[in-house]
Length: 155
Figure 1 (cartoon, helix red, strand yellow):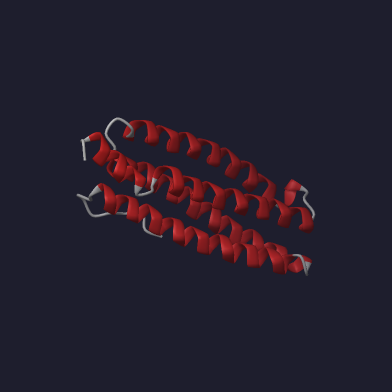
Figure 2: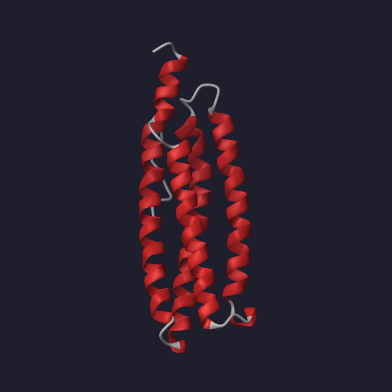
C-alpha cells in the first residue's frame, strides 16, 4: 500500500494517491470476506482468518495515517472548505479507530465469539470500511472539489 509520496504533489495527485489506496483496501476487504466465508465451513480456518483480518486492520490504520499526512495537500485548493473537509475526515478516522480497536479485541480468542459470530463481526467491519471509503470518495475526494475551487475563483 502506498504510504509515501514525492513532494510536492498537486492536490489532484494527492487525491489520486488516496483513491489508489482505497482501491487496494477494497481488494484486502474482498480477500478478507473470502477468508471469512471459508472459516464458516471449518473451525480450524478461524486462526488463518484472524491473522488475515489483523493484516487488514493494520493496513487500514496505516492508510488513515497516510491520509492524515496528505490531506492538507489533497484539499488545499478547496478555498474556504479545505480545513473543514480535513477536520471531517480526521473526525471520521477517530470513529474508525475506535471501531477498529473494538473489532481487534473481539478478534482475540479470549473475546469468546463463536466462529460464526466472529465471521459476522468481521463482515460487519468489512462493510463499515467499504461504506467509509465510499463516503470519503463521494463527499470529500470527488472532482466536485475542483469545481468548487473554480466556482470560488469566479470560473
